Amino acid sequence: MAGALDGRRVAILAADGVERVELEQPRRALEDAGAHTDVVSIDRGEIQARDNDLVDAGTFPVNRLVDDVSVDEYHALLLPGGTVNPDKLRMEPSAVQFVRAFVQSGKPVASICHGPWNFVEADVARGRRLTSWPSIRTDLRNAGADVVDEEVVTDGNITTSRSPDDLPAFCERIVQEFARAPRSAGAEDGS
Image 1 (spheres, rainbow, N blue to C red):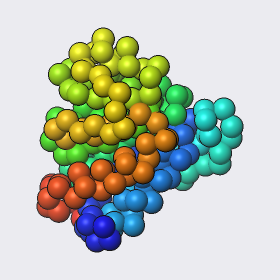
Image 2: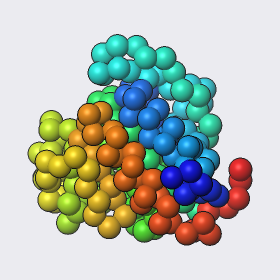
Image 3: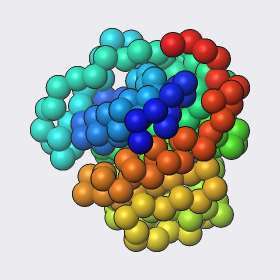
Image 4: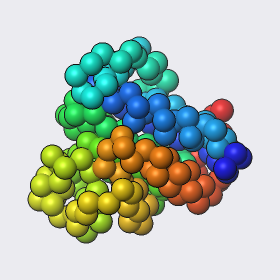
């Protein structure tokens, strides 16, 4: 799918505790398809990655702060998991508002594992068919989502997946879904 995402800009919203493979593999798939990606976070510098939530897995440099970005600058949004990462993001009003605005814009949003916790805090899970890591499914149900146990699920502009085991299907689907966003989706050219 080389070139499928040429001219598209993707925000990857993440914080300390991000599951390395859930940021790294989707990012590689998006960039291999031609997208420009930015790691957007709540603090400057680097974010600490984890492996299976427990093992230090290096860092990712932060490209932009969520306080300084707009939905208009991007064609799509990726929310990787890791238990700590979405929990930190849920506590930051600017991150919650960014997720809410992105979903409400109709632009594609994708999330894996614990990442859909962001949809609960942003109050955008209601009425959506979603999947996630098993331990947060009750939270999603309580927020009004129709929760299913499937490898990858797309409902409108939201795509979700359960775990790192689902990454091949998730990566393939998000390239397809993000390619549907018009190149002129209101994203400013800031390459």
